[in-house]
Image 1 (cartoon, helix red, strand yellow):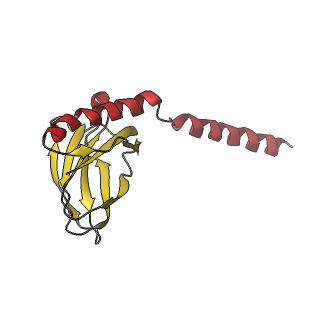
Image 2 (cartoon, rainbow, N blue to C red):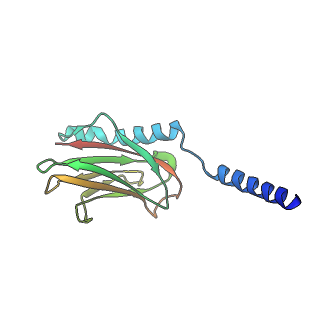
Image 3 (cartoon, rainbow, N blue to C red):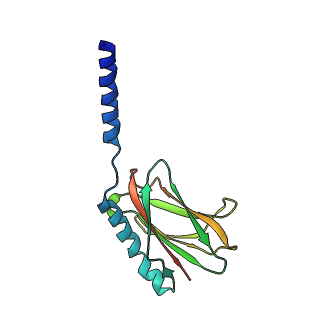
Length: 152
């Protein structure tokens, strides 16, 4: 009976340790990322871009980036305003991947690295992927990331 109890106690301790290391994002993190991304939108609207009313928001970890699949149309120009909370210290980058996985787009980064505007004009109508990741320039941690999509 003693080996069973020892194994049970060790298993419970391991589960507790793992549970404590998984820190979910709070609503405040998500709202901060969305507010920061929306700060990049007004200048693009002045340049003629129309933005969707909803934002894409998700967790961005230092180990693995995110891929956001989108339907883009030939003849349109797109602006993706992407950001993490400004005071997080995390720096990000992004690219649009075409059908063959080739990166494209023109980046307009924010000086401190917490956000960017990614411009892209597809050559064909179809499915594209916006690939997001943290860079080596900032802190490494799980953080909320938001993206506003505009077109003209």
